[in-house]
Image (cartoon, rainbow, N blue to C red; front, side):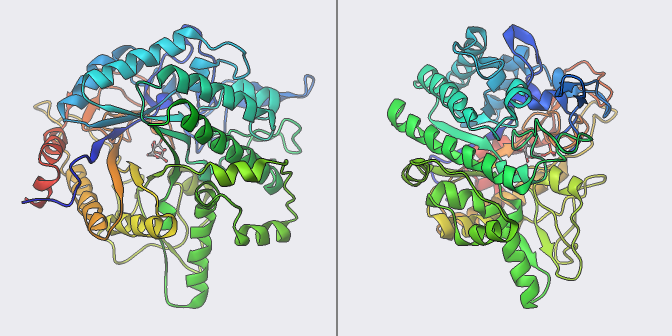
Amino acid sequence: MATAFPERFLWGGAVAANQLEGAYLEDGKRLNVTDVMVGIGNTPSLAWNEQAERWEVAPSTSGVQLSHEGIDFYHRFEEDLELMAGMGFKAFRTSISWARIFPSGDEDEPNEAGLAFYDRLFDRMIALGMEPVITLSHYETPLDLLLTYGGWLDRRLIGFWEHYVRTCLERYRDKVRYWMTFNEINVGRMIPFAAGGMLDIHPTDTSNPNASITQQQLYQGWHHQFVANALAVKLCREICPDAMMGLMLSQSAIATYPETCNPDDVLGAQAIQRKHSFYSDVMLKGRYPGYIRREWAEQGVELHIEPGDMELIARYTNDYLGFSYYRSAVYSSRATNTSTTKLATSGTGSGVSNPYLSGTSPEPWCWPIDPKGLRYVCNYLQDRYDVPLFIVENGIGLDEGPDADGRIHDPFRVEYTRDHLLQVEEAIKDGCDIMGYLYWGPIDVVSAGTGEMRKRYGFVYVDRHNDGTGTLERRKKDSYDWYKGVIESNGETLHV
Ligand code: BGP
């Protein structure tokens, strides 16, 4: 039976450097933002030094910083990539850790050892038949850029970024065809430090590095990132015209449904969609939308826009929209849950539970499971932007381990992934132009939201635990062969 998946559909998986490489200070690398965090939802380990009048790195108070060792991918990537190739991956997404290339972010010369690592990594992927899909910044702004300049709050970041992007494009132009700029800057509203790469270096509130960022600062920081995004597109067209430069956003919140037909519920849900579409509206339509101008006027935000910025943003819009989707939400005008932890760990989450869904992922995460939400999101994005879509993250995290025979049975994962892929197929039939599907975390990695190991997404298990113990041995779960079969049959076995 023929499926709707195109023949060149990019099946594969996605990870991020800071969640699996480890070797966090090796070969010249310095700290990036996530190196001083235990999960992006927690407070960064920084303390305000009154005398020096600056933020400084402080000991972690939130637990073991598992990401410092990750799953030691830095030293084991050959074995890990072979496991991925064993499932028939056509594409593998990871990020370049910016602080491996420019350890402080503002150097003139790149760190050759860092560049050489990614040469080896990409060469290996290509030799194994996988297209590298590369994020330039996945919560990985070099920490020094924040401590010294305030990160993206300072316009000079655009220049440092341009130098970094040019260096990467020139170096890897023959290896990488699919690029993305920033991972999920739309969750920066809740966590400006990690997802926004922003830090107030003249804070009014020194209790928490995320605390004193104002709306004015956030929008100014994003404006700098929009200019930087456009510059990355421009550089890509000049240096590697055959490659594509995408953007990447968390789009779970697009599947925010109104609780009832009460117009207040409908408008409330639409307002949440707009909060998350704002970034793609700018980066894909090339202008600031009317609804954001209203918000600025009401909140007294006045953006500093330099001559040429808007022309650049208008001219260099991205080639495709990469996005993550994990779950949907319901908006209720009578009860709104704005818990920052929930927002931070998922990039979504307002309102009440949805009685029409089959359930949630197991405790303690309890993310609503809504495969049709993915079809809805694909259609929404296709209608709004009419650019190729790339599902670069979707998956389920479970607390699991080997049984008495040493096997890991994960039928829940198979069910979740199958149900979502069937909806991807429906979206393709609806007319969506979907480039590929990259399962998030095909090998267990450190969780972005909570910094723990026990939230496992992998088709491959890694023996490492929340307290830092474990042999790091890799082991295939039951879902490994299942996903392999899906790829081999170009989606046919989804219908079995
Ligand atoms: C996305 C991030 C990923 C990732 C995923 C799952 O928002 O881009 O880095 O980890 O969410 O989230 P978590 O690890 O918190 O379960």
